[in-house]
Image (cartoon, rainbow, N blue to C red; front, side, top):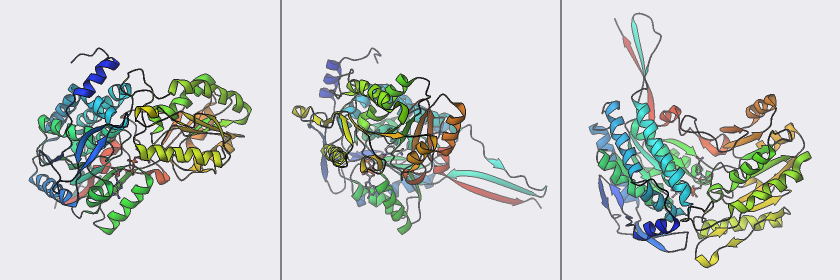
Length: 500
Ligand code: NAD
């Protein structure tokens, strides 16, 4: 594979010549939904139809769960020596990497993100997630309890069984791989339900998993809608664990389904409304302003940890707002297949209307619109929104409280540290937060006081596979990434032996 960066024309050619599969992957084979039903997969770049996707339903879930259980019981994967699972998963990661450009085009066509992000970030991060967890699995030891001489206490972790992973559309393959990596490495059977808005890469990697040597039925993919196949998996009596990333609204529903069925483990990575807090004593306000723009506009603002609330100390408020506005132009949407593009298309018409609705709400609530605010590039047939900034936002406004999931920034002034902490924590969410200050004590105090799963100091969107990721409050429970992720996909067992 050539590693020279492709041009716009070359990416377009790849997009035109791609063959796209929209089938489900059950028991090691691509197949249609049992009902034969399909739905259209359209590209948000220009509205064109990409493929017909199998619309899986309860009967497909039934079949996939039954196969997943059988292979789990048979033990070909679940009882395989960890070092062997590692080798298979490393091959899987390698095959994904070998097909990097194809996966990147699929991701960009499917959900509209810039090709530069797909090829430089999303797909490499997905590969890394499989590889990191594969490499970890034969290095994790269990425990021996500190017993008396006449007893032996073993504290072991074992695979939980059948895992249903239900994922969103903003980082389709990457969010899937945050779950696939540890769940497969730990020996589980995994059924992946991608978002109906972005099923293509999930479908494609299924055959790569098989080619790598993952036994049939260990990794299956069920495309379809949340209220049909998603619900069927979540309510299923023989699914042991639901690993979800998506909205808080659906996350709550999944807890209900679990409670009404078999009390399956429910791990939820949900929404956010993260505060990015800039103190007057920050070392480099230019860097902070540049990062504030990236924090909200990267990936069209469709990021769970987007810095959607920018809290700025009153004494630098006007000056800092101007600095941020200088960066808005570098986040204007363009054709996602152009490697120069920094912001692509909004995932679909529904999401476009949601975001435009929030922009209208911001205006009506009296926030000051200082950039963007309109749909653009409509002539392309795709869905694009200009980077939008509201100044003088009050934290009680809807645009400060509700997750917009689009390129809309709310700038909020604060008086002092206490005021900043109060405003930052006045939210139902608790996914991430950032603090910009040169004062070491203040940085640590804020990091302690912020009710969020990730806190960044003098940066934004930092972290790699070594750092756990997840939410406080209504941003969810459990953690993706790092060795902590294995907790989600294993049960802890105590074996107590009398030595006589
Ligand atoms: P969503 O909740 O609408 O959908 C997520 C998934 O759930 C999809 O696959 C969908 O089909 C499925 N689903 C919907 N209804 C269901 C039901 N009744 N039963 C079972 N499954 C159902 O979210 P979305 O719009 O796809 O993604 C955006 C959301 O994801 C945002 O809130 C964002 O913050 C969140 N997100 C969170 C993280 C994180 O790690 N915390 C990361 C990325 C995205």
